[in-house]
Structure formats: C-alpha cells, structure tokens
Image (tube, rainbow, N blue to C red; front, side, top):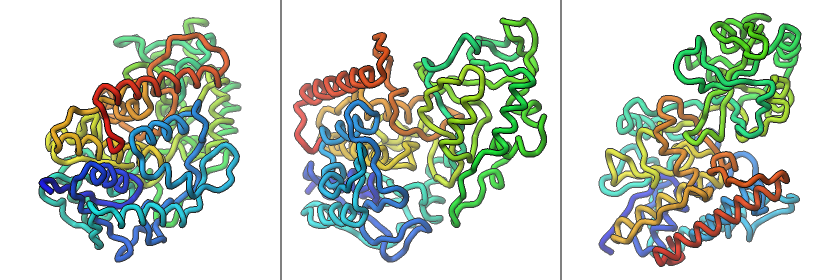
Length: 442
C-alpha cells in the first residue's frame, strides 16, 4: 500500500477513524496502551470501552442522539452496528452490554487486514499522517506532546455553564442589553428582585452536587476564576451579586431601574440559536440544574441543550487549531478525533472519528472531499468545533437540536418539529453522498 496512517488511541473515535481508513484500503497502525497501561478510569482490555454509562442515548430519529447515529450509519460507522448487535433493553435508548460491545469492536478491528494494532503507551507523535484520538484522560507524556503541538490551546478541565435555546427564553421577563450600554446589546439579561434573588440563593446552596471521581480534583482548585456558582453562593448571601449576578450598569427597561441582581446570557454560537449562563459553571446534578436555574426569570420554560459540568476532560482549543474536517490548520497532516476535540459524548466522539478518518482517507486518495451539510448533526458538530466565533471561550458540546440551523417553520409540537429537522438532515446528507458518488467506507 502506498499510504499508511498512524491512529493513536483505540477508543470509540480511534476505532472509527481506523475503520474508515482501512475500509478505504489504507494501511493503519493503531496504537493502544491497554492492557500494558490503563488510565484511572479504564478497566477492560478491549477497545471502545464505555467507562461511564452503557447508554448511547435515544434511538429515535427525531432526537439529536438518534439523528447522529443514523447519520453515522449512513457514513459507514463501525460502532453503531456493533452497538445494535449487542444492545440490552433500555426503553427508547440504545444501551449495550459493555463487554460484548467492546469485544465486537475489538474483533472487527483486529481482524481487518489493513489494521496493525501496536500495544504500549505512545510518548511521541509519530511522523507522517496521524490521527490523535487519545481521549479526555490522555496520559501525561502524550498530553505534554499535544501541548507542545497546540501551544496554549490545551485544557485539562471542562468547566462549562448550562446552555439553553434562544427560542425557549421568555423575553417578556428578560431583555437584551449590554452593561453600561457599551457596544451592541448582545446579552440577554434576566433581572431579579430581592425576594426572587433570596429564594434562588436558598435553592442553589441547598441543591445536590455531583460527587467527583477518585482521580479528579476539583477544577476550582486548579483554575483561578473557575468557582462553581453554588460554591460562590455558599460563601455569603450577597457574593453572587458582587460576581456574575452583579446588576451594575444594567437598567431594566420595564422599570427604568437597576434590578437587585441579574443573570446574563451570552450567545454561544454564531447563529444565535444557543445562549449560555455567564459565570454559571456548576457541579450540580443535572436534575437540580433544571429545577434551580428554571427559577431565574425568563428561564421558566428554558430548554437546556447542555447542563453545566466541572470535571477532568483534556481538550484542545479546536476553533483556533482545527478545520471542520478535524485536521490541524497549521499541520494539515495531523488530525484530532474524539472528546479531545471538544465533542462531548460517546457517539459524538465516535462520529468525530468517522469524520477525521473519512476526510483523511479521501485526501490521501485524492478524492473530492465530502462536505458535511450544516443541516446535519455531523456537519453541525464539525462546524461548532471549528467556528472561530468560539475562540477564547470554547467549551465542549454534545449533539443537540440547538446547534442545527433554524428550519424556518413555526411548528408548535416539539416531536413534529424535531422530525422535520431530522428529515431535512437525512435528505441533505443523502444529496451530498450522491454528489460525490460515495462508497460505503466514506
């Protein structure tokens, strides 16, 4: 074979990337440090190990997770068919027997004539074309090499605030404004009176928090200015009013007066379909976030596309470093895939491996690239991680309907609306695959 690609990491992303390349007839060297060495979270010797939940989320097409998996199958996924073949009962979700799923993926990879599995920890980035899929628990030596490659664009903790859809905000209670009217009125402001603030404070400090795993230290012990909002609230009843909820420089147009406190929401993407709660990085359980943050005026019916998280999660500043095909802007022969790129979730990681492997294969074979439509979930995730709008404030994102372009139709029923998004996505991807005359491997 005239082409060889090194893939580092045999997790979901690495296996999908290796599979795409191998199916295209390209020789793959797949490096995996297990079983010689394990990360603190990994226990099983097989590939594509699921370390947390065994659920791959919803299976129905009109869900973000279901649409993503459908698109992945259209692109020749390895992991989705393996998951379906080793599924367990889980209602409307696709859940798997962890070991059987891992064994199925491992067998497919190890038996492929174009894949050579090389055991042991990788401490240097190989020469030539490389796909780095080392995951959120990248070992220290490789993490240092990635830091050298990426400069300052490497984070070790995911400290993110909740994200809600723009259309779910109640603008009868909130308003657009910037502090002191400086620049454009880009922020959505949710004002609170004293009674509302005190009730919110009480609920926040009493809410249930996530227990960190043994191998994690608390992010705010590492980062300056990375305090969980509930931790800040517990330090005094007025602490938030002198921090992220300070009302200085903001007047409520409905009253003409400064509110007692204010929660600001900042646009999360260039399309303006998503907003994040500024300064609300949190370690609360997801159900508690929904309960407590819905008390904020204007967020009573907010649709949460991502809840806040604070945990160990090595990821790069992809909008600065990566193109939408997951290749590096400065080093186009090097690709990244998986959670290290800032996609969040099992299938999102696997999908990024498909995209990177597919793009790499087509480039090496001098085939026309597949341009994933922005209307697809795979295309939207690719656009998110490469959108320079997020430069300087990039945080990981999973599949959700909020990252898709607005469909431009007023559909009140959510299920019907999301099915319209899904049907548009499938049609767009089918059209693109037909345009390039794609084979099953890409």
